[in-house]
Image (cartoon, rainbow, N blue to C red; front, side, top):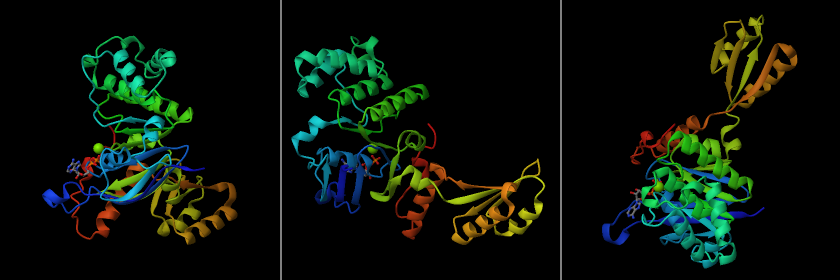
Length: 327
Ligand SMILES: Nc1ncnc2c1ncn2[C@@H]1O[C@H](COP(=O)(O)OP(=O)(O)O)[C@@H](O)[C@H]1O
Ligand SMILES: [Mg+2]
């Protein structure tokens, strides 16, 4: 399986010569995005997500490094035919109706006149905007504009959808529907790369994740890889306090439930693992071992904290409040 996006040492300084800005918006970014994924690019406000997307879309040029999108360099015209793009805060001409706007987009994409009309009807159906087809974009709510934005992005049945903060500014119902639209695109075989500063969106939609802060990639991998295996939990059935007592001093967290059962949590050290396996062998049914899955929020803030610590002083100006936990 190939990669839909390959990024090597990508670096972008804005206004370097005029303002002598010393901090790059994107710094030595190297990242592969495998085919068949919904990739969530997560980071606080100002992390460099939009800059990365602009570089991939050839809207700005890198200071250094390079990228391949569907195997092509960003300035290759072929990419435009094969991807769909939703910019952050899209603004469309308010005097056009949804139909007229999509018709222009379809023409620009080179969709033949014989299929244009039916394809537009199809995408309006997908984003649940059929009944607004003839309404002017100027009268649309933020959520409706976002849907039309998705509609234009999927018109040409793209191999890759690049979405910049697709769920920002939507109410909970609108977010839910847009998430479903994105997941349906994935089910239809479209690769999705989207960025967000909202943790819950990423956790629910994507299967791969990259965390960006201060222009640097902190980690990347599958959600499963990144969040699994931070520890082990031992559940001890009621009536076996002797097992709990043996382990209490070594556990990270101990909880005695009202029914007399125990929940002991151990961090991910190998000796713990071995010891717990022995306990399981010895006590069989009386105990149960499970892996502890870290939630994305804990993982995210741990990564940001580690990055800040490793810089020793917090020069980053990173503010955890710039990241929304739940919208
Ligand atoms: N056109 C620009 N000129 C100068 N600085 C910019 C420009 N666009 C973004 N920046 C800066 O680059 C950094 C990254 O911004 P951006 O890519 O928009 O982050 P994100 O999308 O993750 O919120 C920020 O410090 C921002 O202020
Ligand atoms: Mg942005």
